[in-house]
Image (cartoon, rainbow, N blue to C red; front, side):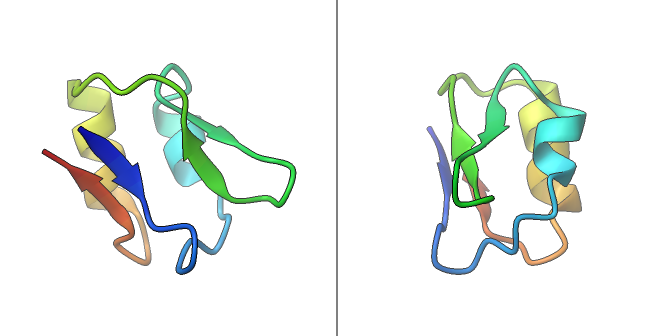
Length: 57
């Protein structure tokens, strides 16, 4: 399961840049999960998120 805390997301786009098959930026400029499959790139995006709002389980 992959989750992004929309309240705390700053919309930097790093996750979508690192893992575009999992994350996308929505109309509000926030990250959303488009494919809920735990992959190495999703884990990497979660680790590199500057505000630590991505949860990967």
